[in-house]
Image (cartoon, rainbow, N blue to C red; front, side):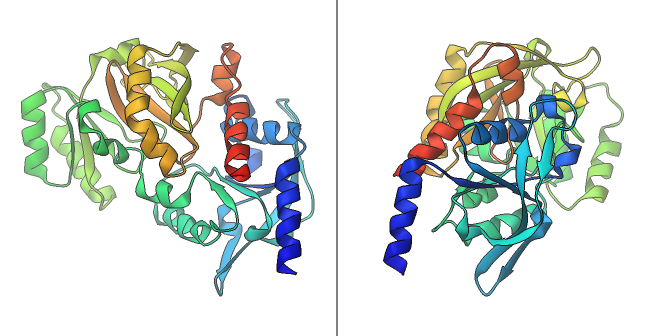
Length: 329
């Protein structure tokens, strides 16, 4: 029975008729025009793959087996009536070929627990991105592995260390270590009298360290999102902050614009690329301001749709090409 099952798996992979389950946030809440998960789903559907969908809270782990209550999924590339689902069924996740872990942060204990559950299926099912690497690589901590690429950065809850950092650099950024989408990010200048109050707010609202970084004036020219597939830079989009705003995230009003990969973007990608590829990070998005790497996004990177709108490459296609290569191996 086992040998016959393996033979069927080999035939299925060679023909690339894959069963794909997407672990994501409620699909009825997404912004279709800018959602990278939707783009990945459309490309999978275009290839004739069987597409399924479930929420993280629909997963269960019992006696070493991971199951989820999933629904078949059909997508339409339109602004309304863009999806339909089949009836709910319980599926062991080792019975699918690929799981896309695509729910958005916050990177909290629920998120971390989901990575532990998905880790149990990695010997049988390709999880993108590798849940162990995702767990070990929070987007604001992973760049510390490459200190020569970062602006001056401090990670601490020590108030004196934070005060010393501000005194040294004057104009700084404060942000939560596990935040996302620009939420909770503050610029504090030398003259700003809210510094102590902001530290108090951070200390009360969470038990995690605070990230402090030197403010980079180059952000006025944009906070570039560079997409890496298997550790190689393939495309980018620039995000321009609104006047009077220090954050360039699209979620908080940053304006996306066409962008070309610079020599520095490619240089940064080459330095970090082998780490990402070797650790199963098929799809990553790095943030580059001027010459500096500020974040490495491995949870649910975005900007696939924006890049396509500006005439860039079909990143979803490149990602699925890479997934198929991994499955063939």
